[in-house]
Length: 115
Length: 112
Image (cartoon, rainbow over the protein chains, first blue to last red):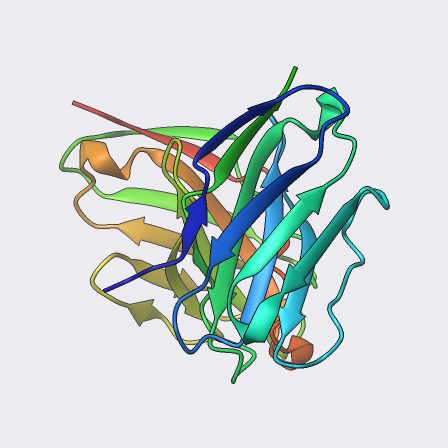
C-alpha cells in the first residue's frame, strides 16, 4: 500500500534561492506534519495541519518558512531565501486525525543542502 | 508532555533480546508511552505504544512499570536490521493529533 511520499528525495540549492518541498500523505489522513532533522540534531517540529483548521505554525523557525496544504491532501513546504543553516532532512508525516492516539506515519524525507 | 530519559547508546548481539529502557518519572495519568525508531536515512517508524498495561505486537513488547515511571521496549530476537535510533515519547491522551516531541533517543547497534 502507498505510504507517505516526499519529493524530491534530495535537493541542492544555492544560498538565497527559494525551494519547495512536497509531501503526499496517506490517502484519507486528515492530519499532516512537517519536521526537520539537522545533522546531529533531533527531530524538530515545524508545522502541522488538521483537517480544515488553521495550521499550527508554532515550530517554524522564521518567516522565510511557510507551508500550504491544498484540498486537504498534498502539502508544500516553501523556504524562501535559503540559508546554509536550513540544510537538513525535512520529514513529513500523516495520521488519520481521528483519535489522539493515532499513529503518525513518516515519509522518507527530503535532504536539503544549501551551498 | 512529560520528559523522557534514555541511554545514549546500547549494543546487542544478533539473535538476543534487546531491552531498551526509558525513564519518564513525571508522567501523568493521561499520558501514553510511545516508541518510534529511525533506521539510518529513513523516516521514523512507529513501533508500539501503551498506557499502563504491557503491550505486544509483531515488532516488540512494551513493559511499563506499575508506577508508570519507567518502561522497557523489548525486541525479542534482534537482527542486524534492528540497528537504529529508538525514541521513547510521552504524549497526552488529550493532546489531539499534536506533533511528536523527539528527544535524543538510544542508538542501538546489533552486532553479528
